Amino acid sequence: MVRSRMEDVWPLSPLQEGMLFHASFDEDGPDVYQSQRTLDLDGPLDAARFRAAWEAVVARHASLRASFRWRGSGQAVQTIARDARPPWREEDLSDLVDAGSPADQVTRAVEELAAAEREQRFDLTRAPLLRLLLIRLAENRHVLVLTSHHLVIDGWSMPLIFSEVTAVYSGDELPPEHSFRDYLAWLGRQDKAASLAAWRAELAGAEEPTLVAPADPARVATLPESVITQLPPALAKMLAELCRTFDLTLSTVFQAAWALLLARLSGRTDVVFGTTVAGRPPELPGVERMVGMFINTVPVRARLHGGLSVLDLLKNLQKQQVELMDHQYLGLTQIQKAAGQGAVFDTLVIYENYPYASGEPMPGSLTMRANPGLEVAHYPLTLVVAPVETGEVVLKLDHLPEIFSRETATAILGRLTRMLEHMADPEATVGGGGVAATDELERLSRWAGND
Image (cartoon, rainbow, N blue to C red; front, side, top):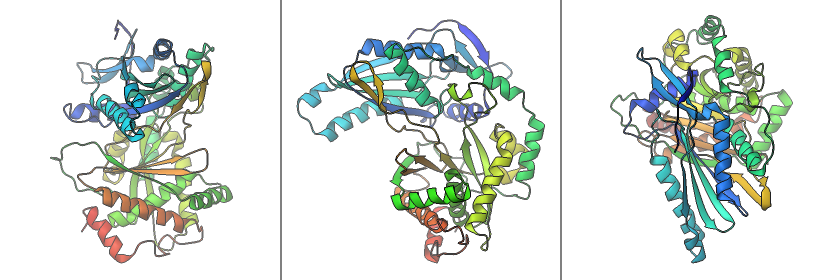
């Protein structure tokens, strides 16, 4: 890896500040915000040319050459290296394939190599915060493992990077580059006082945190585990039709379902949870092509009562989101400080509204297909909703295993599906329909530590 002098110094975005705190809090434990993607490469591959394409894309985007340091004042900044080439390593598993090993054995071998990469923590003070492992399975079959830190790349940026690597490898011309620094400058121009006032108004009257897990300062940090399922196709179609009929977003539907589930977990009718927003202001030129960490986590409040119709709940939630859209750039710590304990939560809902790069054509009939990434958060429960082009919806529930067992997480996902089935009828009430039996509510409460 080659490093050289510093090119620039930038401030941090709000979520970068939060992530840096969590990543630096326990330097010996796992770094939750270290993520990983794999790319299946089918066809003849020029490995040296492919590596050069990745180096060119990193050189093109200053945000990919960022590391993080603290000034003497205690303020964190990101420093941009003039040259920071990503570490590159190659492994060869073709002997396994040539020997006729079962496919699951080859898959396990790839997963073991990938897991070893992910367990190796980044030094956040040394750029770049990404590294590459190319695994050869056969002459025309490879897997690329991209391990990176969420501090420098959000989910929206991933397909942009893959697309640019494809273009460079193919010899195509890239569009003009728009720098993440422009977004940081935009942040500095916002009226923070007005945004704080908007959040105080939204959360007024919410006086207690909405928590599903008991506080435990001595808890040892662990990586969340995941339970993954697919929404029944018929239900996915019904929810899509609901959205079309009433001009709603699918994200709003899942937020409403989570609110209903959270009400049962917490035993409350006024609940707050977090959601991740794209954070890309449409008025900023070229923002849709920028590479960096734009996303932000903000509170979502849902007020529930038994006679409220599903449609009214959905409309209320979507109206709230629209009204707060101009204020969603503000950091969660600032929001919680201004709004008080009612803005505190420990569950998160993520709706992935960005495209996956798949089947990208490259020279010599080489295709590059990106697989879903390994990304988690530090919350006890995080629901990730991932729609795919075929109309299917994949649900992933990340859970801290020391708080929620796999069995419990599976049951929670099943209950969420029942909530969604109930909500497919817009005239139903949020307290009706037998969404959860009494004994099940008691079990959910015990799982959440609310007995």
